Amino acid sequence: MQTSNKFMDDMAKLATGAVGAAHSVKGEMEGMFQAWLDKQLAGLDLVSREEFETVREMAEKARMENEDLRAEIEALKSRK
Image 1 (cartoon, rainbow, N blue to C red):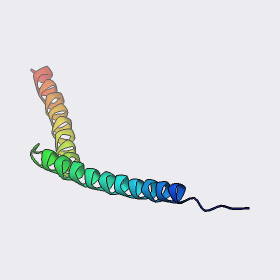
Image 2: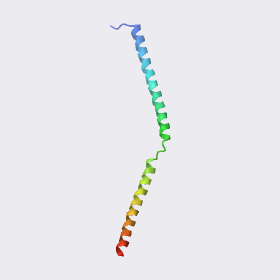
Image 3: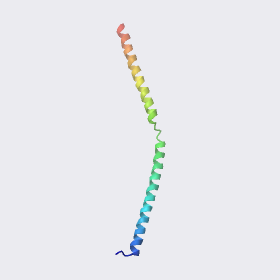
Image 4: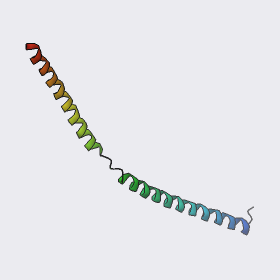
């Protein structure tokens, strides 16, 4: 046997509305935070992964060339 209780119906509607409003606020807050974070990161002058890898490879190549030149210099010194 089910009874209709207007007070309980109104409370259920109110709770449903509150959950919907909270969900909307959550979405707005996430959007605002994402925009703020994007703005903060844009001002940091960060490099991309691709740029980082390119410079790392250049540094490794320069290090190898430096070692080769050092060995060549040592070989020339030992001839004297």
